[in-house]
Image 1 (cartoon, rainbow, N blue to C red):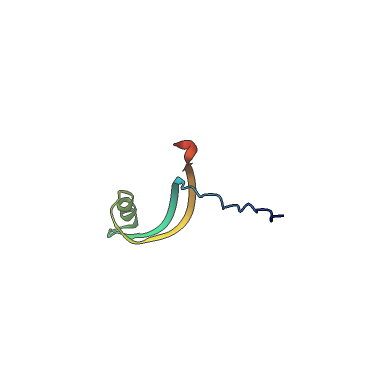
Image 2 (cartoon, rainbow, N blue to C red; image 1 turned 90 degrees about the horizontal axis):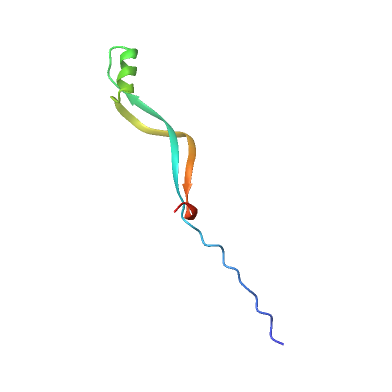
Length: 70
């Protein structure tokens, strides 16, 4: 009597999913100004120089795109 054939299950195939992710970072910037108020205004207007990219402080996944969304 032949040995019973065993079915070997292969692991499920992985799919690639894309996501929209909102990442909040704590960055360090500097700007030359006469007062703290002027510095805040300049930084808020997009002026200044970034010292480093900073650390992630919060990540929120807004949307995941997969086969059902195609």
